[in-house]
Image (tube, rainbow, N blue to C red; front, side):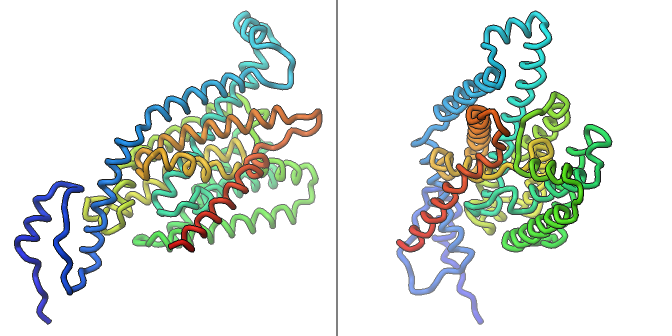
Length: 386
């Protein structure tokens, strides 16, 4: 079969036209190849990124989010169950008084720092996973990262290893995350598609959930079962500076690794073939994002327990501001995640009614589940309109 070569004039026009300015000639009767169609369709998308950057500057939103985050962080330091004003807390802590120093430095400061770090981690990893899988409903739990950390921590609580030394629980969470990530890669294979990767993550998440249920079913110690159930609900209460020292470096390292993937995710948004033609190594990108998510989410879950929906909600709230650009969405989602988790943690403290404190993961699920349902209904409506 003789293959018809493209006309020299058209080839020269494609090679010499700048990005976003190439105009197609009148259509011919012959149908273009899939690769050519992908390259042609990519041009308006790249051009739309530039238009979105000019139409929607992100710095005002970043500034507003940053100021809101600082205000909520200050509120987190001065809102609690002890009736002591901000001036008294600051003066007492500066003077070295035992009670104000204990409240501000040893109880509320670690909780506030972890709120900022865990919220930013969940928001950033959610945006990275959605960009990698090109799925608006993706989050770290989709690939078994959160479930693996939860399984490791639950196993440590069940066996009593968590009581052996202070760092046993977070280290068990790290081990569970690493095991889950390795298992997902073994299931998906070296040259896996995103569908295979998602299926591997779903399988690992289901397996981890089944093992957690099995541990709860076998547990004969009521105290251990109570600790497991409360930990799985998610909370940042009673965290100390040791938790911050242990988890924060890993969260920072994972988030820094994810932030370097913005340009590659921007190319991937145009399609795998286009990204490959632009020099993006898809296998290396997947490994890089998985390692970053494993470091950050494993550290976050090991100190906070299971906190859902932040990684899903934060990127969607910022998607319109980012103009569909994954590179701009990453830092916006990190700030939005930190702000949302600080707001939820303040809500937990304000809703306290002299009984058991409402768990943070319960509140985020109560707020995030309706958002998730609305997102599904909107996607269904858009699909029906098309």
